[in-house]
Length: 120
Image 1 (cartoon, rainbow, N blue to C red):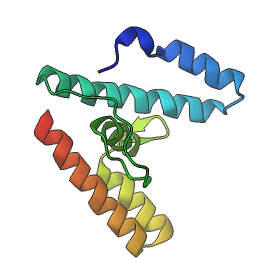
Image 2 (image 1 turned 45 degrees about the horizontal axis):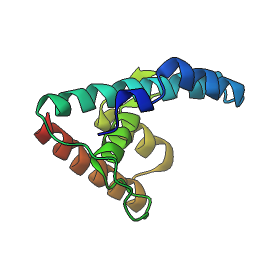
Image 3 (image 1 turned 180 degrees about the vertical axis):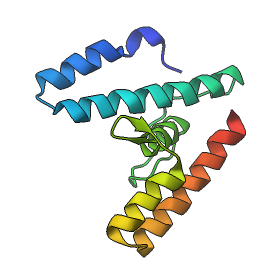
């Protein structure tokens, strides 16, 4: 796992996003996702599971443990509020309909959630 010295802290990241003129609500959302990802990663780290930062082939679906943690954390944050996967997808189903794409996405996220829960 990369040493903590090589990773930017949240203040640096927030300031960088501000300099890049990323809207405030997006910056807040990013920080909440980071908090949730760190919470999940810490639970996994306590189980002494190696989390290598290996760059997989790209197919835009989370492959590495780190990508899965960030993906799951992102789905748990709506704006700046923590929500369940069920709540998150229920909102999307109500807004866009229970489409095949959303149904498949929910299945993928639930699979990732089970994988992460098995590690925590």
